[in-house]
Length: 292
Image (tube, rainbow, N blue to C red; front, side, top):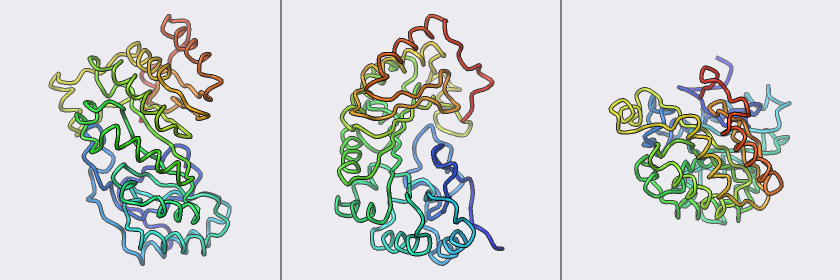
């Protein structure tokens, strides 16, 4: 069959909606986060080089109007440098019109690469790395089985930035439950301030059947904040965040109050908007319209 070879569910960041999607790994190298149901259908592996090469050739023939490419699945940066460099060289040779290649990564895969490795990947048009941080609070990171501490995540993010690659970070509203909500928000704001990413995406946690978090929720061990609680958490997180010139977005389909905040200029006006929403003066998204 002529076409791209995709296996299982294919997940990409919202900002890569118009990118060429090239699947080079299956699943996620960590795949243990308690809230995530994305890759439970597949064991992590690097795909066969011949199949990847066929997909690159197909994209070169049929996707000449697209300027960006996103490498799937969950963590292609874990591919050893000796294999990743030739892969990117092949993409650059066959699709020279591409302006940017993006990928997901985690703290472990970033720390496996030296800064020189990352600079080399940037030279081959790896222009953005998406890092799922979820929280800046070590207890929360431990509870959700993230596999990294706040310190390790900050160091990973700073390393990406030093290499000149754009950094997009996701954080999760509600992931600390009702008890740890504001602590999680403050610690996450502090982590973001230390990391200073180019983009922050705040998603509201959705409880997915089949995940360990779902079992905790079913058995009453995890209690998700209501929409007012989520708004208070978002306000606390924003108030604790200082970015030199990043974009903070809470416009994912899961969010009650869609926001797009340019730092530092729009921070104060956004805090005022959230305060108005907390007072019931701003319309929130109804529950049935929220989605993953």
